[in-house]
Amino acid sequence: MKLPPFLFLKLIALSGISLFSRCTPSAPPDLGKTGNDTIIQRDTMVRVLAGMHLAEAALIHMRNQGVRPEDSAFTYYQRIYAKFDVTPEKVEKSLKYYQSDQTAFIKMYDEALTELSKMQSREENR
Image (cartoon, rainbow, N blue to C red; front, side):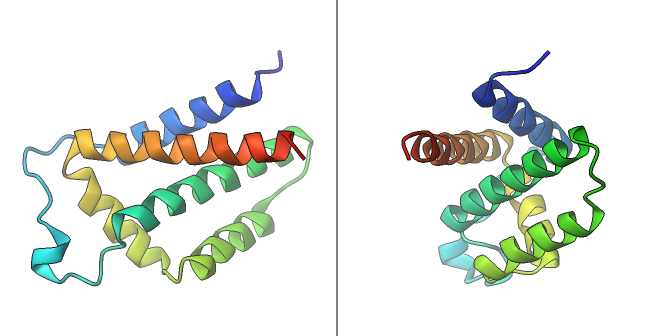
């Protein structure tokens, strides 16, 4: 059974939320007040999340086609890190930081889904 593209993206995003989320009572501190440059700024983090989900969707598609995407996974993620000038460690640290406020983290994922939907619309209208 083939899923509609939007539903497929939504399932991937929901999987990402369950993978990366955990409940913690404290809210993250305000980046502007802490001057913390080890955390990716929120807007950029939303785009990083969208890129990661797009990469995962491509890798799943490759696996479904019988291709072993191990080298591709590394390449896709390296491109994401380079595009946003971040490191895997900074992404991981930022994910942990943003997870500390579950509601805000889910909102970030919603924004990442919106970004993916916009990309999909642009592709369909080409």
